[in-house]
Image 1 (tube, rainbow, N blue to C red):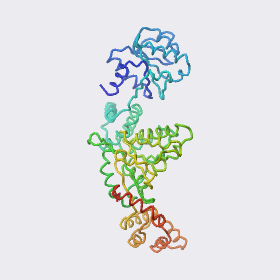
Image 2: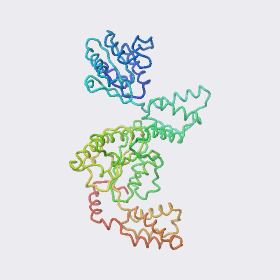
Image 3: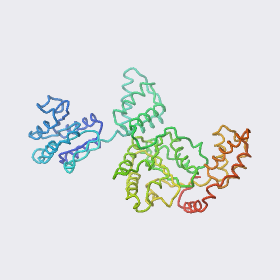
Length: 493
């Protein structure tokens, strides 16, 4: 017996007269109910506005039960116990007569065991009925069920005259992970489409799944999506962080249970402004081949009571629907209160509670990357182990890394690093961040264009001499941040 079937049988045997099922997979839910009814020998009935009330397996419609209220009156009067499934009942809850009839049926359960099961997307029964109801959540197909769907479609394709499906095992495992979080019908259609397209499972099929999942979330999403995010080739230094991520890549993009490890939760990147935290967050998604989704707290905050928290829950749900993916929260300290939250009526504290609960309890393949510039503003609860896997400190680059950063930004602008004195440039930028080095290169190019000369080391050196880095302008704050991070965090380099 599957877990979902066991849970459903348990709820009905617990003698709840009302059960609400919020799902768009009506056919799959009805199949589960039929198995439960057969297993427990329960009579099963189903009502819809199109077909009226009938017994399952399909029989003739019971007379005068096409209307919702008429069907309720029939159920209220019949001595027949069993499960009565009501499809798309949400609009009828507005009528107080319907609510009264449902309540009377529920209150008579001890005389006649009739269980009303309401199935619809976004179903919510009236408050008067809540205490007599249970909620059943139909889980989305897991990785094993997705693999079974792929096997079924591959066998069907071969019976129809197609050949053996081509593709690498690593690509197949990545496809399985991306299809998790989708309803069964959508997953089956995509599998059938990619198999019959070119008789193979390729990385292009992964992109097709990502596009479908993104479009299925609609235009009202609160997250910014990026599929092509970048590469660690664009990030200088951070060797320790890169190695840490590479070791955990198989567990996030593959099947962590098979490897006998936990799904990686995420990292907090703390460091000096401009040192490369945001660039690293983008590169993590790029190097793992995962979609990057950015959560902006400014978009979440709403003047209406409870709306901010609702938007956060919706955003986290959207991230889980896109799993496996990377969820990036930039400058997280600006959206969370480290005090009692009195300045905003406690909204930021409630946001923090919702986020912390999700960080600790989630099982989906959503890798969180949070970045922060000011540790003094971070709530202590966010820093403990279990919320994230590790806290990395992204410091100002040393000389070797500064040479690497100069080379990266010169290549990015189609310039040959070998034509520049990288050592001299690196020695001249002690205390510079990666962002400040990039801006020195950009400004020097403009100077060279004004002089109608090719860019040379002298142009960059002149611009460096005119720049006062943040480590000088905000020396006290940078020193305090470095002092706090020493011994408390893991160096990213």
